[in-house]
Length: 265
Ligand SMILES: NC(=O)c1ccc[n+]([C@@H]2O[C@H](COP(=O)([O-])OP(=O)(O)OC[C@H]3O[C@@H](n4cnc5c(N)ncnc54)[C@H](OP(=O)(O)O)[C@@H]3O)[C@@H](O)[C@H]2O)c1
Image (cartoon, rainbow, N blue to C red; front, side, top):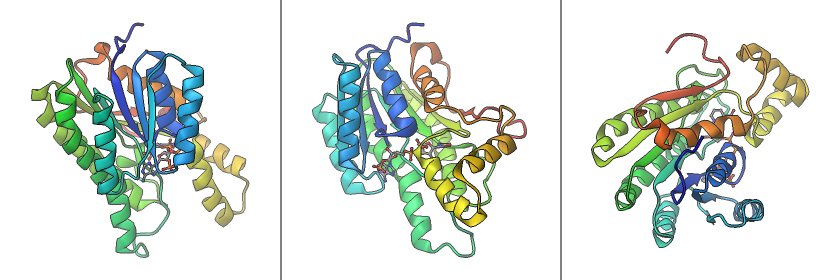
């Protein structure tokens, strides 16, 4: 299927590993260009190098950025402008949490609010004028989670901030369609990325089981498929949503979850 993405440019936050890296790769397969960012500059440079080696004629750029910080976001926007702007913004950077409501301090709530919600709000505010300068349709996709509607017990801050991002996406979709910009969110279920190894490390220590046992148990408990998705399986859907084949899609939170959501939404 030709997705019509040649010469399009996508900015993907949290693009050095995991789902974000796979989204970047799927864009490159469609001959779009990408700008990826993440905090760890060594890892982002390595990701850019790997992608350039695999797709030698592709436009691949990367830069260090902590999207929870306004000053970094402003630098990222300047970088994107210097490269000719973007058509698509994928607000993907994020991570799970582990706390109880009674114990979590204000600082932790504010940190995740900045990472999952303010990052998207600020990037949108600064990049919508840039997207509007490009010909054709613009697309913004926010990575939420099944936890935005079906909470996991150990990460209330994650659940709450992803739910907020979900509602933000809906409000934004209504506001930006007048500028020919479609906004959606994608809610992955279990996707086997480095973030899960981090979570598993914390929880298996408490529960006295191996990481593999933890993955097997959680996949069987949470999904009819009984398995995690690969990052590629999820990334392909993001890229499809930016394409000329998805022009009537907006304002929706799309689950890509192997059936993990237990009811109908
Ligand atoms: N994996 C899943 O099962 C799953 C399910 C539902 C939703 N999600 C969501 O999908 C997104 C990607 O998750 P993932 O599993 O691919 O995570 P991952 O493997 O841990 O990758 C996260 C990426 O985000 C970057 N990042 C983290 N904090 C950042 C910050 N403050 N500023 C800029 N970049 C930052 C990381 O690089 P640095 O550490 O170098 O910054 C990395 O590139 C997240 O929003 C996550 O909540 C994941």
